[in-house]
Amino acid sequence: MKDVVAALVHANQYLVIGYFLALNTVYLVLLALAGRTIPRLARRRRLTGLDDLATSPLTPPVSIVTAAYNEEPTIVESVRAMLALRYPRHEVVLVDDGSRDGTFDRLREAFGLVPVGRVRPQEIASQEPVRSVYVSTHSVPLTVVRTANSGKADSLNVGIDLASHPLVCMVDADSLLDEDALLTLAQPFVADPLHVVAAGGVIRPVNDSVVRHGQVVEPRIPRGWLPRIQVVEYLRAFLMGRTGWARLHGLLIISGAFGLYRRDVLVEVGGMNADSLGEDFELVVRLHRHLRDRRRPYRVEFIPEPVCWTEVPDGAGVLARQRRRWHRGLYETLLRHRRMLLRPRYGVIGMVAYPYFVLFELLAPLLEVWGLVTVAAGFGFGLISPALALLFLLAAFGYAILLSLLALLLDELGLHRYRRLGDLAAVAAAAVAENLGYRQITALWRLQGWWASLRNGTPVWGEMTRSGFTGTTPLDHGSHATVPETTGAAGPSRQPDDDAPPSGRTAAR
Image (cartoon, rainbow, N blue to C red; front, side):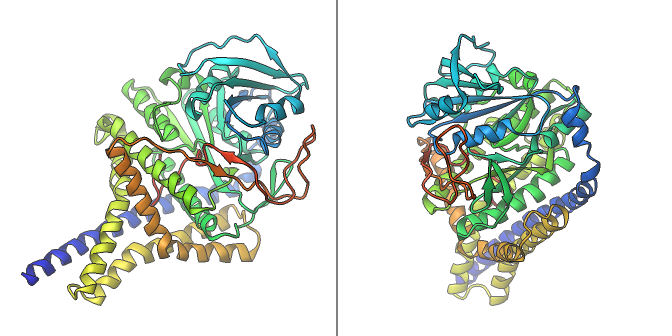
């Protein structure tokens, strides 16, 4: 009997080892594809024509749509930063989703908001009617919409409805964009306006970076280990995962914190799905399905250079809720669009990208937890050799650490965001530390989210107390407000994890 059990344990371990070797080899292929793209973009940075785009009357105007809920401490500075982006013509449409703090009062005071009798087109259905619409008297293109609390997706649909321009950029209210981020993201639409329907940019953690007047002037690695490890996740996901998938024409994710879309296509597919926990992931999958079903040529692009900076969770409780929700959203989206799986009519999306997300994103935490448990049990009972246990550790963790370090190297050679040697050393250390407990506990959280979805449990969003931004100018409650001089209590936010999760050993939505 012992021999039978030992044989089963051995067979299981070889299966799990093979799975992790295959998973990390896929990541290596994506990294190789990204390695051909990012250095080329870096070399062409001075020849991208952003100055021409910034002054050309032919550059398509953009509506920046954002939803805010209880963002009083940072909302004025965030809106000022959006309005100050270098772009020839853009507007900001902010939907106040029933905030219970002074979010609207701060906006009204800072921008001289007055009510107008603007009628919502109702091209996209939403659960809550518009209560009131305000515009600024300070000669800035700002529209503020007040609605009852109905969630981020529904609020964004209201904003898309009221957007005046042909391109819509969805941005989180507490995120910060690089000055040229919008120009860079608009380039594919200018180059191919008939076929490009969506484009996404990079999300990076802003925790402990220096921010002045809505701009990140000195990127820094967070001091805490939890946000520091998330820097590694985001580097690996965006520079390796999404850049690689875009090269294969199989991109399924555009971050909800920073994505640019053609408004007519958004209206055509019905906007954001308010019933989805992974609304941004589900939107991109639905775009692919809709356009493929109609056999219309289109492109979904990813640009690895424009950066949206966002605060990531620095506590285990918020991080746990985030990862549970991400994996639940992943499962529900894949289930909703399961007819795309292995269907040749969906091309690379149906035959490559969709199976990848099922095998290597949805199932990854299950296989990881199962592999660790069986290896530990088999080793403890003397059923497997130390050599086999070492092979498992190398396949599951050593390979992964190598990929993370290669992603860091690619970022440094191509984009060079972190200029201090100590920051690079800290990220390298975090790439190792990620595998010493962090990966295992996040795998358990993701399994909990999956289990909650299988039980049809009610999702819990929770609240995140944001630390605010680190800068050198104190926050003024008047019309010249800037970011806080030091990090401090910045108040709760209902949606702490609105930026799309990185893919690559973290659930993608």
